[in-house]
Image 1 (cartoon, one colour):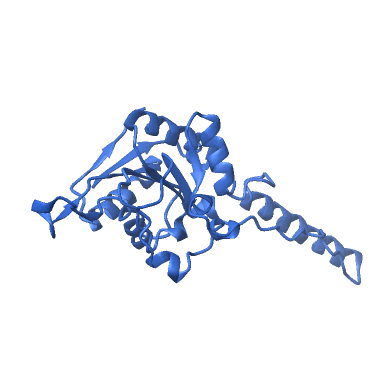
Image 2: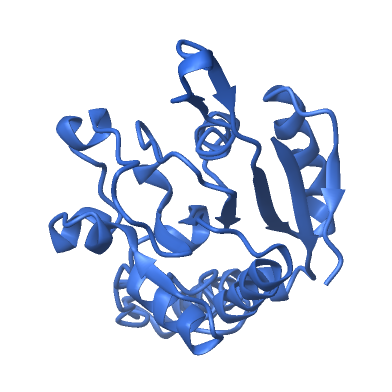
Length: 237
């Protein structure tokens, strides 16, 4: 298995549209027959409604006490603004749904389909949930696959397709173990059907492509070494 990466700026790596544009560019460049796109980490988090802050509750028995309370509330508000980067909408990268990722890739000329739809699973199975035990145990190589399947990081466990050429890792996997599971979707051992090779096993080569900033490159190198990779190659677009 080859482990490769596309270098992006710290700002661009937080923008789903720019990351997916690079996914499309790599797909056009490498021309995989079948590939998997895993939405990970910061992009796969659910959208949570932040509790609205009601503002300061100024109390005090004297005018001096009320002034002190107001100063404290102003300080707290400054800290809240600083923590949010001064922007109410800057709580991290925008969450990315499977359907949105597919529609974005399709607009870029890439035939991308939600994995849970292609496999005939329930619509909510691909929205951040884990696959059932029956689905995890199934071998899915007989299903005719589109060039690009999109799903969430949590769906990698137990997933097996014969013939996957590339795994795209969009976002930061939750751990080195999770990266191992994602990378394990390529380089799979498959049985041979020829009469003179019955019982032999062929390991199909594959590529794992990550998208990261320079600050995360050291971590990615460490993870790839933990899965036995001999090196990490940059894809220049």
